[in-house]
Image 1 (tube, rainbow, N blue to C red):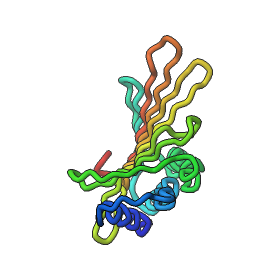
Image 2: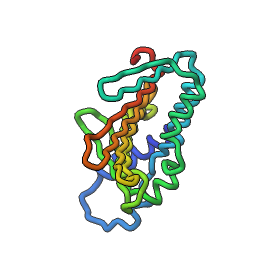
Image 3: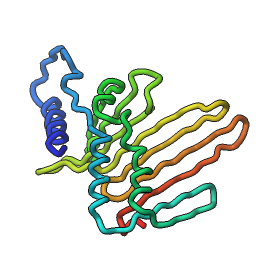
Image 4: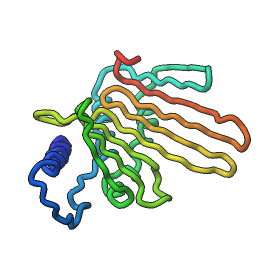
Length: 193
């Protein structure tokens, strides 16, 4: 995993350096190395399973807030939103175009995946990575998904903060009514409770 991210960073740096000759690119897609979102999150889940910390779940609906500690099986069920087959590397390669850039202010690379077709499961996928001297570190994964069920539009935003937490925000908008927003947060880093 770390080798994969390091090789992507090296490829990006190498492609931005060098001479100024303009050469046609033949198979740009062959140069891409899609980030394995589902596999990365599965690895994080294994790490959480190995920790002896409590896992807190917070739910926010409008002005109402509720929180409680949860057991590992519930954590797994909730985290599965980030590990579905749509986020497997092969599906990302088939359905999304990868773009990347480095923010020189923060030093982070952002890998953005945009759908090739309108019916792709996610409308946006962003992975934020900090290159390091020996290994790269993932900071976060962000996903956006929209769907329509009868006369209700549902917008979902998923955010995985490495080694800390994840959140899922759902906004349901019924015809001619105010949207209903619910946010779920799951936290395993005690300093972030």
